[in-house]
Length: 209
Image (tube, rainbow, N blue to C red; front, side, top):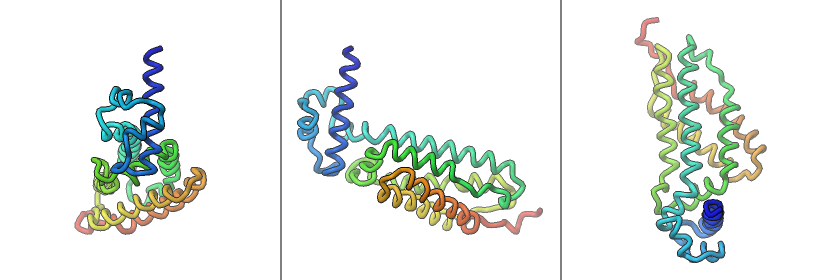
């Protein structure tokens, strides 16, 4: 019973903190205001969280790590699929399934991701978008290396990684309905996949076929 009560109190503080961070950002958010909104004392908050940074992490870390896991698994699956191909011309351009999975996950954790994107200044998460660009950029060479005779244009891979991340963030920031967001991003991602094929990858003419 005590454990259930503690969990309820912790969740109450997290929900109050979400509202505070969304309204004021990390810098101006007040632990006193969070506790007052939750109807609890600051002592209750410090029982669960060391400080404001720890509370912020409790909100954004779980969904952030979950998203990374989805992406890493997808990249690994792509490499395995590409290894089976004789040519990149045979690659499946339809990425609607992974697009829907990512969008659905974003909207299941919408407040946490919105806080991460709009209220993380002066936290360890303030460069999280750049980190995802690097993650996507680094996923490309192993995919290209899976097929003999193809090389990766590093500059174009970096550029396309930025465009891909920005496309997702733009839709998610401006579209409140998850099903509409899925429809929008299916088309966008499939368009970008074609762009990856044309711009980020090139035939290595030095390789004998």
